[in-house]
Image 1 (cartoon, rainbow, N blue to C red):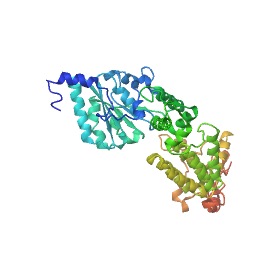
Image 2: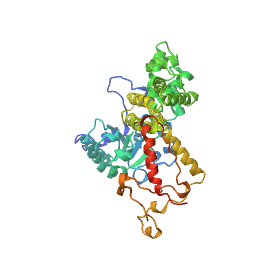
Image 3: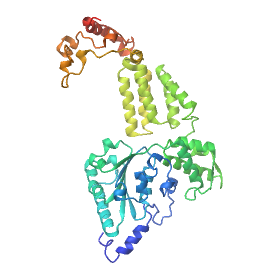
Image 4: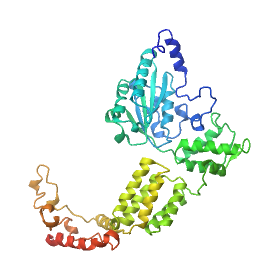
Amino acid sequence: MADLFSSDTADAEASALRHVRPGSLGSAGTGDRPPLAVRMRPQSIDELVGQEHLLGPGSPLRRLAEGADGLAGPASVILWGPPGAGKTTLAHVVSNTEGRRFVELSAVTAGVKDVRQVMQEARELRDRHEMRTVLFLDEIHRFTKSQQDGLLPGVENRWVILIAATTENPSFSVISPLLSRSLLLTLKQLEDADIERLLHRAVEDERGLNGSVRLSDEAAAALVRLSDGDARRGLTSLEAAAGSALSRGPEETVTVEDVEQAVDKAMVRYDREGDQHYDITSALIKSIRGSDVDAALHYLARMVEAGEDPRFLARRLMISASEDIGMADPTAIQVAVAAAQAVQMIGMPEGRIALAQATVHLAMAPKSNASYMALNAAAQDVRAGLGGPVPPDLRDAHYTGAKKLGHGRGYKYAHDHPHGVVAQQYLPDDLAGREYYVPTDRGAERGMAERLARLRSVLRGGLRKR
């Protein structure tokens, strides 16, 4: 470090540092060519695709990318978004401003020592050469609290422009002091039109395939579907498919068959935005409702193999667990929620196993829509204007003056009575005696009808006179 910043070489080193393209990934004399996704990484903010909500004129991120420092722009940002949305790309674009160098660390492999070294170098570069360091920290949610604490001095004193990326909610994964010193920006999943634009650009651009192949509309649509909003996945699949086409000769057309061969799976004829999306989703839910576990697994497999968003599948299973199973098997919603959490934590492709387990559980569970129908009945009364004032004895009596209004007066504390149940009216007067929930005789609900009748008998032994 002392030699690098010695007075004899300071001017030469500073000049060299300023003119090295930040984040360049050239190999050290190996001649290896970077992957297509790396070669096509935008070099300026105008080349970015998607995230228009963050890149408008005068926006903090645009000002930062255009060279604004200090009071003119944010010192550090946290980018929260799904994989392939452009978090790394945004960091590279910000670093490409003159007078900045780019340092990339991964929270998976870096430790406190690495962070401290970057901070020391950044401070010396700033003081000796007036050069700012852009520190891109990928997967910051994997850093422990103590590791994140190590970032605070550099962020607080603006030794670095920290750009931290995460796929998890920063409110739960990033320490509060770091959040308060950074600008939190949420990236959206890229739209299909964005992915298609990137694919065609990669085919024509000299940094990409330079027109060496053509891309059929069907192959482009297949690649868009497979990418599932992930630009990196789409470009990687395109590169592999183009290699298959070029094996036949120059300027060949990339076909759906090339894409199939590249991804090593047959393309599923499934449109995520069209009728098939809704038809197959409907078939999945109706198969679960009808207790046909084999059909349910078939439709689940079709959606998974077509690249359907696993979070969408998990949401549909959670809805089915409550709408079609309910209290006939109260564990169904627990299994569905657990599957959704598993998908979130482990991702795909392993997440499909948890989705399959939940699908089997739901399909084989006893069925009841009693809870769902009860809510609909209650909502119908509400929409009809029924439901008067809350009975006075049930109203909040904790604030000053409430007791003078009679709030809480006469309320019977259920735990003070045998079996924890006491005669008391809970519904408004105009709905007293109304019954919404009618349990079935299936599964765990089988024994609920008798218990419910006893409860209602005790509760309504003291109905107010109307």
